[in-house]
Image 1 (cartoon, helix red, strand yellow):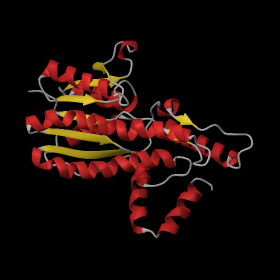
Image 2 (cartoon, rainbow, N blue to C red):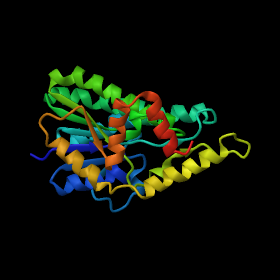
Image 3 (cartoon, helix red, strand yellow):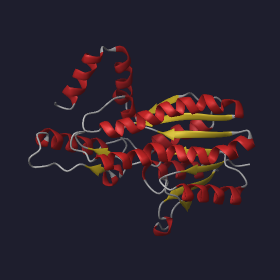
Image 4 (cartoon, helix red, strand yellow):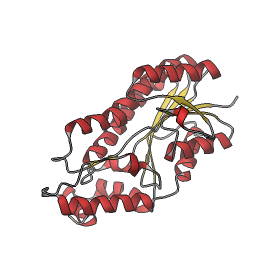
Length: 267
């Protein structure tokens, strides 16, 4: 029987690419969107789900299980970006991103676990970020949300292994998606002491996204993970230097690595 896959944030970007690719490989794919009724001619089914609303999470998962009788794979992909100096970023906006990227992902996992436990099988793939392995200037809050999800995944993986459930992280680097349009940008204030350097870093971040890799690489990576009977704890998907930056952080003294980042971001 075809595996049933649920992808949060499946209406665009990485989620859409993954869903389209898995559909072409014979999987039964459901994506989620807060407003699926507004999306026409989508390449796979969409159900309504807002990761910040537990009722919608439960309703969406119930709909998938009612239709298919099972749920084999969860791709926890829904997320949002945030930029800004820590000092000037509104705390409410920080909380909002944590609610989406961290607590929202946890709520979806909590909702699928009873079904997967009853099946004695299941796979949860959390889409994190290479940015979650390091504190990036003007992206510190985003890095924190993804780093926190990486660590929770490590813990959950051990907690549910005896139930036949597998959990893993897939951390993308920069991909050519529309993430920048949905990102919260702390304004560049005229009187800000960070004005010049923050603006130049915003321009740099946007150029990285615009020139990013094709999201099909993430789709292919997730397809391989699904077909792996014993997936690793962590996967990284991106260009060589993005992945190598994680290796450098492990082997270089902290201040040397910090200096490399500061040079890269012209700080």
